[in-house]
Image (cartoon, rainbow over all chains, first blue to last red; front, side, top):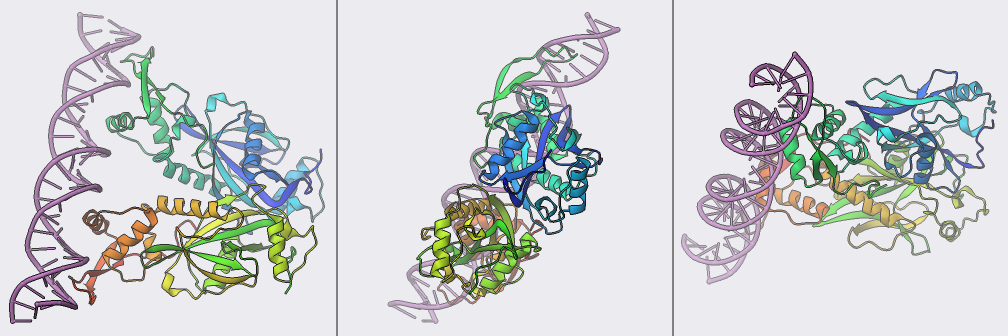
Length: 241
Length: 241
DNA sequence: CCATATTGTCGCACTGTGAGACAATAATAA
DNA sequence: TTATTATTGTCTCACAGTGCGACAATATGG
């Protein structure tokens, strides 16, 4: 294996992605583990010399999740001079059998543009990249220790997600096409991190005009069967990518 | 004069700043004009090799406005591969008597991190930088044609400012310490671009608990003198810089 | 047939807001 | 001095939205 060359990528510039999914009753994030080091990090990558920044992020997500056309949104660029640790990066490279000179571009400072993505957790086929052992889901409140400033990146992603929950049709991208009101409420509660009142939530959602009610579901549970809903105008990609 | 060296700055990375001020009844933006070219652009700059990204932006703003401790907020990173025009950059450099080789770092692609700033328009002492003829205020609805993708940057800055108007105490930074309710309403209207109802606005502002009423002002105008107000907890720098 | 858990809906009180009305008042004109 | 004028501060009314609880409807299991 060869280390990526500075002839192919823009030096000093990287991206990191916070990929949200919803499973069971929890909001989850994709985390990778680097070979041999026991270190965890957000999935990220570099930008090709003549590649659009947004395209680079979509490329990286497609390689790891096999998903195209993902809801993706840039939220902050992390540019502290000391956010990067060359010694840790070197350890990751040597653990993969790559030895690079001390002045190699991968051991220098990086500014990282951070994105968050929302995906239907059931549609993903996870695929580790070359440098990592595994890629898997972690509860947002049960993350392993992360490299560099990745914990701060996750916090800020969550913060942005919460702020956008009221204005953007986010849940379309976290739920299957048909869902119950209960499921929708669980997604809201998982994102906001607080319980919501059932009847008020239901009333507000119905009044929004965004939901279309479908036939009843045969739950097989010992209670009244809930309606199924779908979003009337499911938005896959937001206006502002 | 010497062209800035790639030994001092991170290549391929720049920042641009949208500096808002409020004068009269209009929202205004700082625009620079490059020497000899008749080209207008947002004030921007480069990031030192070991300089924090945020510090680089503050440094550039201080050089041009003589203001320290500015309300500053990053809002988007523009990363299209074709957003930059090497021929226009070369023309700017040659107009300043700088000739650089074709493979110079300044003629290569740039990714730009964009910030907006809010300042009290009356406190500024404008100071053109080395490459530019002038720096001055323009109405947001009367901008000259701008270089590169700077028009898009301005639009997105305005969009972000509007979204943050409800959640953040923005107007502290656009008004003097003491102001009338009428002035505050004018700022809101200038940012939102739409008229607001006077009594509802007044009621809402008073109910927010953010304003402290002071003594009456001697306006010299032929009508009832308005109260003066100040913000109870003026925030200079936001939590998220 | 009854108990149980959950769903769909309604009512009530409270808050916030758009819209208009009206008195108070500082300067100016008569 | 008094009337006029423009603007300010406040009030009222109607209406929409929300927190919160209550209650009937219903699918399953005993």
